[in-house]
Each structure stands twice: as structure tokens, then as C-alpha cells.
Length: 121
Image (cartoon, rainbow, N blue to C red; front, side, top):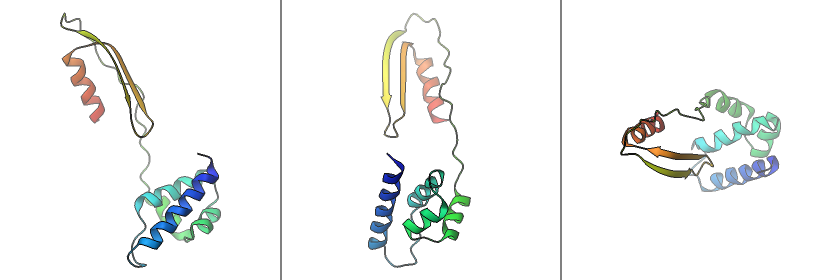
């Protein structure tokens, strides 16, 4: 999505939240705060605060309280044994985030257990 569309979409989301919140003291939803902070990669803080009608102090607080993004490894090494009970499979997982995982080859129960453990970590 182009940057201008991201800003416009977020402006619309803020307007919708403001029109549906129960009072002015309701804290801004975390998702909106995170999206505003993410726009700092493409816009100046003054452009963001003006478009979203928030204070610079708010944006700074949201940026400082943001949890650093944890980089997960792209590949997980799984040991393959030479068991005669193995079978060949092709698995493709597509996540809602847009990430994909492909698994192909010989799979046994030990390999699947290792895969599940790696996915949990």
C-alpha cells in the first residue's frame, strides 16, 4: 500500500474511533498507536500529528513505549533421520500476515515434533 494510502487509512481509522468512543478520556487503542508510530518511517512527526490530530507528546510517548520488533529467523534447521517409516510430503502454509512456510521432503514424527517446537519459540 502506498504511503499516502497508509496515512489516509489511519486518518479514517482515528476518525471512526473518535466518533465511536465512550468519552474523551478513553485511551487510544494500541493498534492505532502502533500504526501512527510506524508512519514515522515515511513522514515527519509534524505531518503525522497534524493529519491524525494528536499532540507531538502523544506520538513521542507511543514511540518510546513501542516494543522493539523481534526478528525471527527465516529458516529453522530440522534434523532428518533415516527411519523406514518416513513418507514424502509437500506442505505450504500461508499466514494472514502474508508470511509463508514451505515444507517438503521426508517427514517422520520426530521431525514434526521439532517443527511444532520451533514454531512455538
